[in-house]
Length: 506
Image (tube, rainbow, N blue to C red; front, side, top):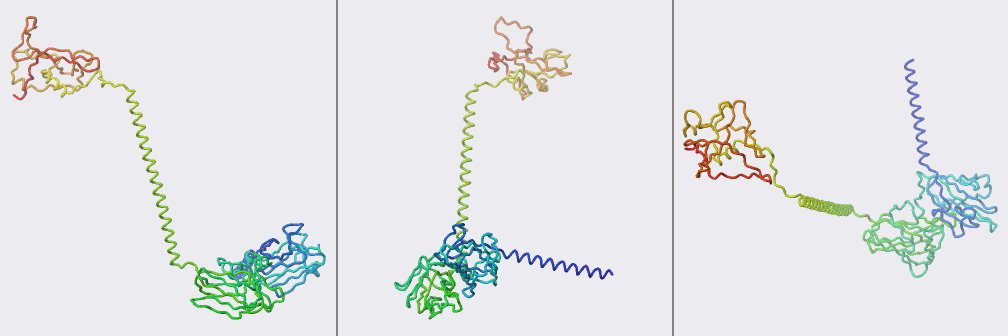
């Protein structure tokens, strides 16, 4: 039972896959085949001189008696038109099949999908190149036949034929197109038409004079060439001469005709002859001479040699070098201009700052350095100052036993003076700028004796010392600190005479 269930599921899955494949294939085919509408005024539709724009709708074309040609690669085509009340409508397919559609038109046509006022006549054909010749005639002078447009099935929207028209795909799209007016013709025998119907740019060259010639001179190397013109049932025979591979090739009595054609007007803008692969050289020419019949030439298409890969590479390299140099030069100029602007901005900023600084300096008055009320005095400063002034600083003594050097049992000798340690000065020693005596902060256990500047004995009798000066020692007495001037500087008067400082080297 389980095996049967598994087989059933497998078959069902395969059937679903096949259905999906067929569905997707149909969608792809229908998507590739597009229904394309060709307006009646399209240049792809070639009219004769009797056609004019419709009086009821300018997008339509109308005629009493006339013909129209249209070429396409298609499988299904429909003509949308309003028939004349009395007249004939003939459609030639590829110049062979003839269809009379005036009789029974109500039965063979339907209402147009483009315009309900028109009739639509569909035709099914194999998908190959086709040329349609629609020929109408009316028995009443004002009974017009009106063509509204053409719809057809096109593979991916492309219905361009390969053997008909100026855009025939038998020639590459980049091939050169030369109109018949660009050829050189013999002085007699040619009818150069400029208003010819069904022709490219309304120009057509026709001749029936035997011996009439036409030539085309090449300015470059030609690889393939195609002639386009009217192809009829009787046609013509030509002698064709063209260069190839450093030699001249001859086609004698080449037959340009289509005996199977039933339409007497033939096929328009049809490819009537091609050279196949050739190699011409600049200055060589193609020569055509009529030997019999009637020949009608519309235009010529040919391909030229493209640049060789080596030359193409050289062109690419040269182009790359030129572009690179241009880009590099542009970058150099750009960054150079940026650097110049940056330097200018820097110089301008510096000048502005200097000018602003100079203005500030001009506005601010000059001032001497300010002196604070309290200045720190280090040991070195004190030593230098006391040494310069001949001061003697004794060792620190306890605050309750402060003695002058001349107090005690005996005076110290010079050796004792030299052996005394230098005073330890507190870095917090302050000098007051208010004119008060020089003071030093007291330590917990020691204090410095007051500083005294020795003065010499007066020479006059006005001096009254308080006590006699002991020999060899200077008296200690307190002197006021130097006064501070008005501008903040110290003003100090030197003593009249100071003894030299004691020497510690002797």
